[in-house]
Each structure stands twice: as C-alpha cells, then as structure tokens.
Image (cartoon, rainbow, N blue to C red; front, side, top):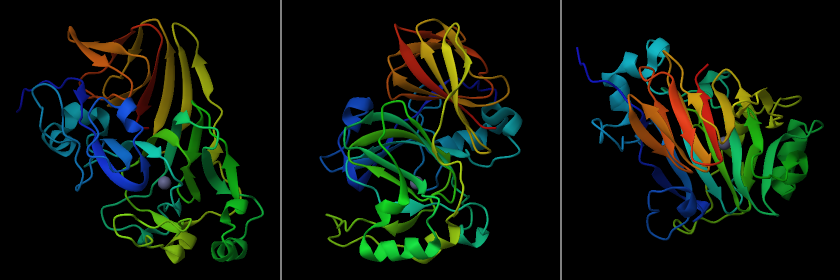
Amino acid sequence: MDKTKLYPLRFEPIYQYRLWGGRRLVSLLSAPLPGDEPIGEAWVLSDRTDHQSPVANGLLRGLTLGQVLEQFPEQLMGKWSSRFRRFPLLLKFLDAHEMLSVQVHPSDDPSELISKGDTAKTEAWVVIEAEKGSQIYAGLKSDTTADILRKSLHDGTIADHLVSISPKTGDAVFIPAGTVHTLGNDVVVFEVQQNSDVTFRLYDWGHIDSVTKEPRPLQVDQAFACIEFGASDSGLVAPCVETTTPVERERLFDCAAFLVWRVHGRDRFTVGEAAEPRVLVGIEGSGQITHDGTPYAVGKGDVWLLPAEVGVCAFEPSGEATMLEIAIP
Ligand SMILES: [Zn+2]
C-alpha cells in the first residue's frame, strides 16, 4: 500500500478562450494569462477527461486531479471514496465581458439528453466583480410559457421573459438544472457546478465568433426538452448566517450537489472536515492554512483542495479575509 500522506493541494488554472470573455482574470489569479485573446473561463478544479487540473505543489506536483483520485481514493475522498470515480464538482472563475448565450443544462430526467459518462448540471455563482451595466438572468418569469419563449427567440425579445438581476459583489445566485440562464456585460463570478459539460444554447444575441467568423450553433429543441417552466428556486439567494464568532460563517448554497459557505473575518478559524474532502477558495484578502506544521498561503483567487486525510486545519487570515468553503453533501 502506498504510504504517501496527502496534504493541501493547489492546482494550476486551465484557461479557456471564449468569444464573450475578457482579460479581468489577470488581476484575480496569480498564474499568468496566455496571449491577448479573450479568456472567459479559468477552470480552477477540474476532473474532466479533456481538461485535467494539474497539482502545482509538493510531492504530487504534476499529477492530475484524476490521477490523485485514482491512486489515493480513500485518502482524498474519505467517506465518499466508493461513491465517486471522478471528482464530482467543477470549479471555475468566469469573466463575462459580453453576454454569454442564453442556455440551460439538463437535470437527470430526461436522462437521454445527457451523454454517457456525464451528469446533470446544477450550478451556482458568487459575484466577484460587477459594473453598473452588468447583467445576470436566472430563470423564466412566471407567466412565460413554451410558446411565448419560442416566439421570443425569433423576434429577439427573450430578455423580456427572463428574471433579471443587477449583480453586486458578493451576490449569490443559484441555477438548478433546467433553469434558463446567462450573464455578462463585465461581470466576474466564481462558479461551482456538477462535473458536467452538457449545455444547450437557446439564443446567442447575434454573436459572431471572431475565430470561426460564424455564429455558434444553437440546440433549441434539446434546450426546450430540459427547461423547467413554472416555479423554481433559481435566482438570488439570501445567505443563512450560521455563526458570527470568531468569524462570520454564512451558508450560501445547500443542494444535493454541493454545499458552499462564505467565511469572513480577521480572526483564526478552522477549515476542512474529518473524513471528507473540502475546497477552500480565496475571495478577498489572504491568509494561510497550517497542516502538519507546514503553512500553505491562500491569496485572492487561490483554490486549495483539502483531502479527506488532511481533515480539519487552522486558517489564519492576514488582516481581513473572505474565503469560500465547499463540501460534497
Ligand atoms: Zn450555465
């Protein structure tokens, strides 16, 4: 048996060209942004076959997240080791300079819309930066029927039928599978989602891809097959304050796919949990995790995976800091 002891793992971000992207991730992430093309997404924790996050620190440096999970399933996943063959969450920062396509992700039903090996996709956003004109659409207005929505695709009035949010830094937005959604006009968000890449585009604002010189394909029929019409718990979330000392701990999202807390303050607190993996994301300020006497620096935009074997660690903010802690329920 391999006696390697796991430790807090940091991963290199994987940058993705997107026609709607910008260059704002330069100031958010420590790794340099490639080229000068618009970067829409930084995948900061990914166990996708085509995009594997590489470990950036310590003994396991260079191994991918998938390889770590394969070689150390119990040490990494703890009580979830028999449940997941790949890491179930995909974490990203999005820099939406322009509007993304209006899109929807499937739930598990109907499952024929999900390609083999993929899953449903519920996702959630925490707003990192927003401008005056920034825009989030999350869900359909309650009186929007399938007929009204289909007609609006042709006359370009789809935005009139979507629930509109003017995002502010710190807003938390929940997008369960089946929710029509998009965002853009210079908004940067942290995104937590199920490890899935199934997206159906309904509408793309007339965008032409500057690389292909073509509009991007739409998947209108598949999108309609997975849209949830009627009442939904999508949209802005009211954070639930769990504790106020020694630091403020708010629960932002609590669904079947993920749990997310926001921890804010200047005093020492603990992160991680025995026998399960946790992810820590630096949102504002900085500090350090200490594990086995070794400090691990956490800055803005940094993502650390705390393997189950690592368990509970102390976190020491340097001044005022805001972190997200993410768990698998
Ligand atoms: Zn989405």
